[in-house]
Image (cartoon, rainbow, N blue to C red):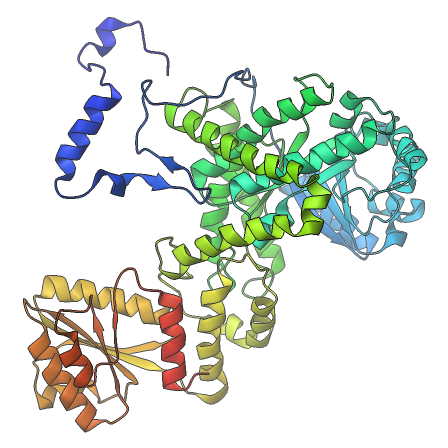
Length: 592
């Protein structure tokens, strides 16, 4: 940021250059390598923990920040019954400060004049941006119909369904149909499906650029002026829960898009409109209220990143709480951040932040490299057809899954700190199973929740739930930390923890540990040499209850073979693949 000229105010705080700061950080870290506090992003570039003018990276041609940060709060309404959808729309406009509506049409006939009139009855059409998605099979006819509706020529919504390939004369007709509605966007680029499959932020940007480039190439070939094409575009992106990255994503896209626009002869100042949806891939079905926390950070990222329109998905689909309650609570996120946090008063909070400018620049570089690969493959459509897009997303998704499975990335309520099922969820257990089975490929929650739900289903249908007893021994300060880790570890797999007690390594204690007939006993032994105690306990447990599964919390000691010979099954500790191990314990305890 620009240094203050008020020397009196800051004279007690001398400036520190980056090299001085790093030297001090290295000293304070002692034996911990400095690289441990650096962040390697899912897109493959590494970020320092702190940036100053000496090590910051910025992109040339910085855009002047917006004078105001005004975003439109959009509610998505599924339309099968136009009367019901109209009532929902009117209620949203009156009670939730909704300023945009997306009507997701369930059938092509809903695009006809009579249905549209009923759907829009009573809505102040010039004041509310109206979007359409779903079964829009004939975009030209829909645009021509909308242009005849009272007030629609002033509407600033758009079509969120991607435009199918047509003959050149039909493409000219498409633009002619929209001429009466200059603020209505009808060329949509939707990257949310790629996000759901597991695309990284740089891949999402690159795919948006490549799809926009294909549209420009397609319509300029039909002799349509490039500026008109850009002015018709709406770019739809997901806002994920990695706060700073998601804040930088729309900023990086806007900076890169100028190069695309200039290449086709459009003015660099022209930009598509940006539409954000909160991420669908990190939603928890079994602990839905944690979704509200994730959606809040996603909303902050989207607002501060500068999206024009924001849609917050209801945090639950009606399987845990009512759909109306979920809609209201998620809708209130927007109200709180605007009316109480006043985020609309901050025009461009990332401008001038060395860290965010560097993150934006590095994200843009990574995205541009992916974009060039897509272009070399023949463009967006060709890259999809050849399988290149799928290949690149799969590569990134594999790495992302690993961080979730070994819990380097935490999803509260999913791979850490799960909450017990509610009576409503237990009643809807079959619907929850179906929903989890149909989760998108890139879902971050489905792996753990699918596993946990198997144990919960078995409990509800047969009364059997695999159980764990946690045995503590030695230094309480250490053994209790190990026990907390073990407790959280097994609860993520749907195991019941039937006891957690400090015991001596004798036969009487072993009998006490087996009182509630647990399937697994976890040993949390905080001693300088835990092997003798653990070996004694394992032999006694296995003698008292053949088939018991002793597990030790902590990394394997040098003499681990002694423990394995005594009957120890395995070790659990930070860094193991938690999902794989829980699956193995399910098999061993008869859950699956």
